[in-house]
Every structure is written in C-alpha cells, then in structure tokens.
Image 1 (cartoon, rainbow, N blue to C red):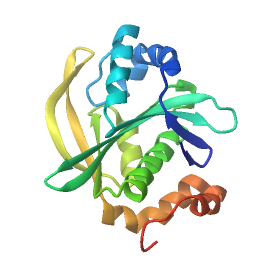
Image 2: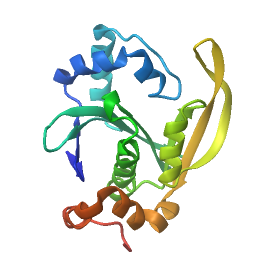
Image 3: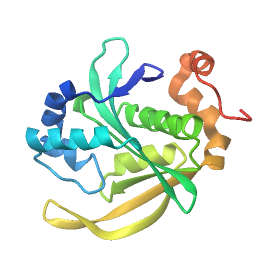
Image 4: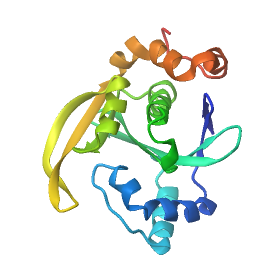
Length: 204
C-alpha cells in the first residue's frame, strides 16, 4: 500500500468489484473517467477484467481510500511501459464519489501517481490521456506540470458526436524541478511525515 497525505492506495481486491460495478455503470462518472469513455460493464466482464489485471505485473490497479475512514472514493491505475528503452508510466484516475468532485483530489492523486512512477519505479516519463471535453482533468494535469503533447483527432464518440483525444506528458527532469512545490501544495502539514516515510528522489 502507498499512503499520500490523507489518501491510501491499496491493490484492488475481488471484494471491490461490487463497488466498481456501481461506478462503471454510472453514465456521468464514466463519461469523465477516461480518454475513450465506455459505459455499462457487467459483473462478468469486471470479473474477467480483474483476472487479467492479476496476470499483468506491469499494470497496477488501486482503490483510493481515505485513511481515517477507510472509505473508498475512487480508483487509480499505473501501467509501466518500455518503448525504445525509455521507461514510461501511463497513469489514470477517477473519483467515484461524485460529491467529492472539484475538491482537488484529482490533482492530489495525480501527484501521488507521479511519486510512485518517478520515486519508486524509476520512470523516465509519465503520460496521461483525456477526452477533449474533460476540462477538469486537463486543468488537474496541467497544474501538476503535464504538457499537452498531441491530439488524436475524433478518437471518441460520446453523446452523438466525435471528440478529440488529448495526450499529456511530463519528463522526469521536469517533475524534479517542481516536485517539492507540488508536494507542499498537495500534502501541506503532512509533507515532513511523507518525506520521512518515503525515500526521496536522488538529488532531492
């Protein structure tokens, strides 16, 4: 498990599938949760997907929960890739509790995923994908230092029209330049506690 401020990232367990089934069949939630929104996933499909996750050691799936209450509030994922001998971490998240939208949790989770990627897995770069209309996700990524790297035109069909897919990325050196500021902004008075628990990136 990985703790970041008041959030805990724990592996997805089979017992979580009932909650995931609820989230994955919420139209509004899924519309804003990924770069190519899909909706209506059966429990059988989720169970098959879960079995596939368990076989893939490079694709990490987390339930994000509040440490104090142990309440599950969303999911986070991190897929490790190695293209041309460059280590890449493809990250993504969504907040399943819609009453918590707009409270900065997406940004906090994104910084935590970058910490896992750069500080624990030694990635060279992080990337994330989003659909054109998901401005809240774009804002969170850019606030964490991601830059829009490209556009896949008309890549998603949602609500009767086609939308572009947007690609964002951040390099390790870029993250290092802003790391402490991001940690201070997202962890506040829990920063020192975090730094004591986790080995810091070389040079920082």
